[in-house]
Amino acid sequence: MNHSESTTTSWKVPWKGIVFGLVTAALALVLVFTRIAHPKEIWAGLQVYPTEYFLGALVCLMAAWAVDGVRMRILTKGTGDPVPWWEMTLIMMASNFITLVTPFAGGGGTYIAYTLYRRGRSGAHATAIVLLGGFAAQTGLALLAFTVLTLMGELPLDVAPAIKYVRWGFAIYFAILLALTILVWRGKRVQRLVIRWEVAQNWLDEFTYYYRQLFLPRGRYYIHTMLAGITYFALNYAAGFMLLSGFGVASGLKRYGVAVLLGVAPIFSPIPGGAGAAELIAYHILDESLPVDAVGTFILLWRTVLFYIPILVGGILLAYQVMRYAAAPRIRPAEDVILPDENDHNK
Image (cartoon, rainbow, N blue to C red; front, side, top):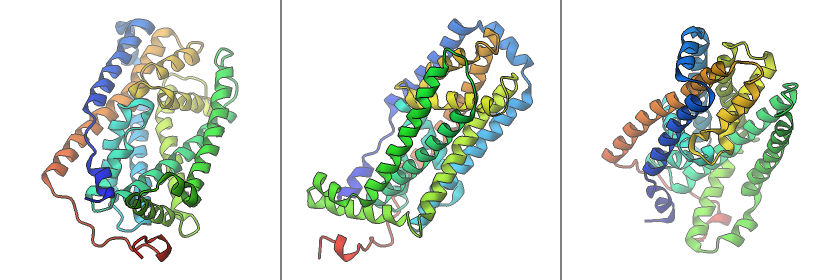
């Protein structure tokens, strides 16, 4: 077994993380029901909440899923043999389940690499796609969040200083991501200092070959992936915007900015799903605009659309895909990649 195979076939379903994520999700509900509003008050709020805004939020969520499938298909197309859009979308929905139940919302990338490996790509090839896809999407997120938080206007005095730090934190995050993207692309000598073993160097050469392919021609695949990432996050936060619209909170870009703040909160939380982080932000930002029981109703709706429904749908898809992979052999690649002479250690 070569190095690229060993890095991908070792992937296993993170059952402990999934169980822990589901438990924390339940605890988030307990927090809402015990610390923010009584269940009867929340239930009364749900009965009068305009259904069209809830359905609008679901439409935004499904549109975000579709765009996420487009984002990763762009990258598979950039290195040959594109995965069908619908299949890539289902894979991304399943990986989103893992992301939601892992700390800092970052656990789905390994599963995507594994599915690409099962479709015939090498470990280095799959890793290049997933890594650049993550860099591009997170760069788009940083750009979107910084822009919205800069233009959204004034916020309550008790949270305004914190938002200023979050905004500039995203600016720094944007710069770091660009530096990492370029370093992985151009930092061959740095990589050689870290990796010495010949097998690992061969893996690195193949990884670098595919990684650079995604910047050709003229960075088209990278730029399209970043734009798709911006669109994905914009639609995801639009779901929160729709839910806030049902309560008449703020208006325009300020309302969308609140949705962005709620959406990015789980990224900074070590607790799977960001349980407690989004609720805390919602409580502090919305307490001047809504009664306490309405805040509890909103949090429950927000969690349902952006956490519980994706967990339910993604969990079902993940279980199906894992069983399918277990029953079917891996697709063998048509041919190995032919590296340029300067990258081939066998010459």
